[in-house]
Amino acid sequence: MTPPSSAKQALTDSVLEHLLTYGRLDESLRSIARAIGAGHSLLLYHFGSRDELLAAVHLACEQRQRRHLTELRPQTSDPLEIMRMMWANLADQRMWPLYRLGFSLRASGIDLTGQQDDREQWIATLTPLAHAVGQRGEQAADEAMLWLAACRGLLWELVTGADPSAVDRAAERLFSHYASRRQGSASAK
Image (cartoon, rainbow, N blue to C red; front, side, top):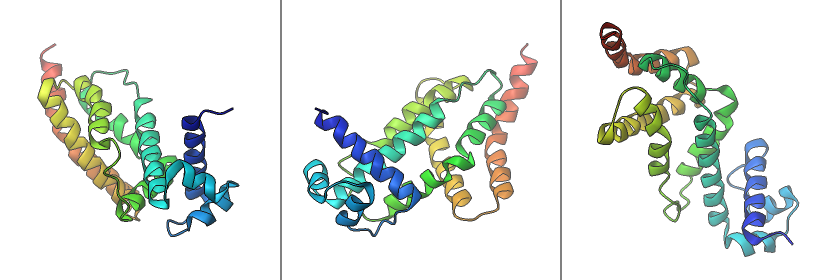
């Protein structure tokens, strides 16, 4: 027998894939259940409501985005190159549907307060990259918050129709303040 938590996760993953591929956020719980081949009562049992289901999907969406970023393993200590690698990883076109869904879920009005603070999880994910560019302690967490806010804004522009080359130039401009650190580390050698 499948444990309830893994059954719930499997349902969440199925709904996430459905919404990424075919779904609309205005679908009823019954319609979503039909689309993934599950019973309406099964979704109610595991989630309690459509909003709770969508909140679980949002959490899975965020987790998948963070997992994609944690695959980045910089092989350089050059701060500017690390920032460029991070942006290339985030801006990967294969991730756009996930970003669109995540932004739509945030804007949909569903209550996401019951979730663990995804902001803190993002900070924890980004802090090792901040360490890689020479930030320590509270500065590393502050740098991670700056990247989170800026990259979310850049990604929003990217997935809502802005010219990708213009968004890349804006990202490069954001990261240009690392150029002085790059020169400073080169002259210290």
